Amino acid sequence: MKKTFLLAFLLTIVSISFGQNTRLHLYTGYAFDDDIDSYYDANNYYKGTIRGNFMWGGGIEFMPHKYTGLEISYLRMDTDAPMTYYSGGVKNKTFNVGINNIMIGGNRYFPTASPRFEPYVGGMLGMTIFSIKNSDAGNSRTATKFGYGVKMGANVYVTDNVGIKFQAQLMSVAQAVGGGAYFGTGGAGVGLASYSSMLQVGLGGGLVFKLTPAKK
Image (cartoon, rainbow, N blue to C red; front, top):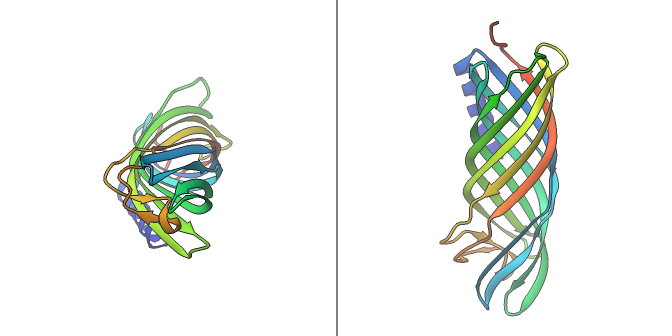
C-alpha cells in the first residue's frame, strides 16, 4: 500500500511540474499464462505456471514533442501459481502471487490522415515487485527485480481530449542470479541461486485523457 501511495505522489509531481501537454492513461487488460522453472540441483528446483489474470493500472505521460511521449506507469496483477517443487520430497502447491510493475518509458506516435486515430509503439524499463504467499503456511516473501516491456496499439479519440485505447504488450522480468524470492521450502522462501525469467503477453486497452492538449 505504501508503494501505491508513493507512486501516486510521484505521478502527481510529474504532472504538475511539466504542466503542459500532459496525458493520463488508464489501463486494463488480460495477461496470459507463463510457464516458469528453475533447477539448481536435485534438491533445489521448481516448475509451474504463473496463471493469466486481469491486469490494471495507470500512467502519466509528458509530451515534449507532438509525436513523442515520456511516461511513468504502474501495472498490477493478482494471480496464483500452481507449482511442483522439492522440499524433503516432491510437492505440489498453488501460491498466491501479486505482481507490481513500476515503469518509465517512451512512446512514439505516428501521424495519420485522421487526427482521431493515433497508432503508437513504446518501450518500458523499471522494477517489478513480486509478493509470493503461501496461504496454508501463512508466510510470504517479496522480491524486487529489473523489469522491462514493449507495447503497441492505437488511441481512438471520441472527443478532442478523450480516447479509447487498444493495446498489446509484452512484459518480462530478466533472469537473475544470486538470490531472490522462490517457490520452495515452507511454501515461499529466499536463497535459490537462480530463478526463471517471466515473460507475459497481454491484450487490452483503456482510456486516454489529454489533460493539457498540445497547441496546434
